[in-house]
Length: 224
Length: 361
Image 1: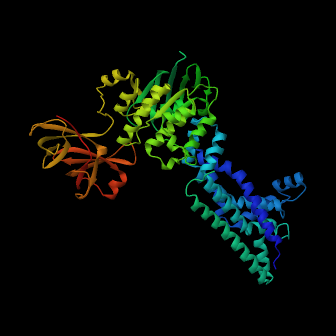
Image 2: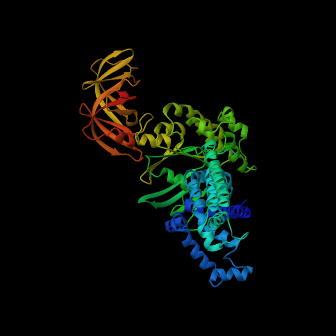
Image 3: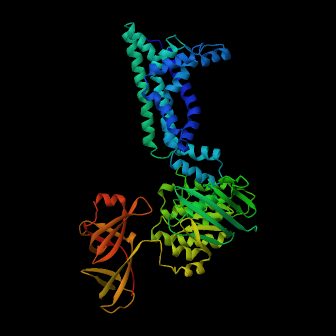
């Protein structure tokens, strides 16, 4: 029987990462959907970078930034009394950056065009921008939110390279399922590797299946 | 500045287009902003509703300044008390008809005088539609919901942006009485954007005529329209071709008109002698194009024609195809996609299908 603590850690990491991404990603995606700023392409390229960058490259830079000798890592150590590298918080920061495009891109697409027009309509009906955002933009973008949340969650579940670089392999702290599988294979413990891999495969499939089922049942707009 | 007028004074440049409008609109009755598409009517409307911030100028409603670049005043759209009915209705797709109406009702100022929910629903005859989704409504029904939704905000000023332009002629006829109800029963100061003489002469008390971003005439509807020789049924902003032919015979209450080798059939409500020369007005939008002579089709007027040229229109999706019929010119308004799919090009032999024509003896 494989050690299930790594699975629990993975689930926690994916949940916290998705939640943080939702908080940061929603306003950023909103800004991108309506801005005419000339910096937009630069920001968009930066956000998409984790799609093409090898995770080890990203992890390497993060490891350096989080080191207690670096300004960011040092500041963190002073402020919290804990190092960022090889910690759960470090993993969350790494995962947030790694899964950024998976949150931003579906949201940005959902917020463009018809939703922006609907915001104007809501204003003509006396709704303030904040009011209109929650009563018009969010309900009209439910599909975008579901896709963004599920993709960010599933993508974080499968993360390996960044975690290995930033978090290493500390049981209960940074040893997530993908790393445990790697470790099992290295130590020729194929039975546990099989079991964990199958569990991850099933969870990933079910998560994505739910999205497609959702999109089929609610083809355009969800009744709230 | 009197308390009962809307002062518009604005100048704005975008994409090389100059908008320069100074006009005082009395806050009573219906004032039409009238002109061809691209003349700046909708931009003026957007500046009033607050969706366009002009480069400079001032917009003042009664004694309230909504925009002034000199005084650095800018009132955001949702605080202006302007109700806009958009051309494409913009009903919220995630809400039912009732949900759309409630959205406006909940945000209206309850202390402001206005008509009740029940009065508005009944005036626009919406009771049977309340539980429907906007996607399931016809164009005319959507417009009625959009008008009711705007009325529920208890606006001080109503803006109607070509509310009939997305409807076909039959639907227009159905909605016009509702617009007249709107005017008589709700009596809100209204700005009505239109490029249609019929609508304007039927609904508006005053007309502001625009062209190329400037006001070229303003005043009482009948005065302005007659000064420009505009009368109901004649639309200056619609591409129309005139074909000359001669009456051949009358058969089954239809008039056969010969144009070269072709014959066009028209409903004959006047008696004309064979051989009389008449002029036919044919709107470009009533002309379709086929590569071969179609059979089994309700349109009876098909004439052989040759493509002379293809020009863009102001709406990117459409093109105007100029056809040659018996040495005369006939224009067809078709989509760019159709031009591509039929591989239309100058010199091509086609059939023009004419849905309707009016004639002047």
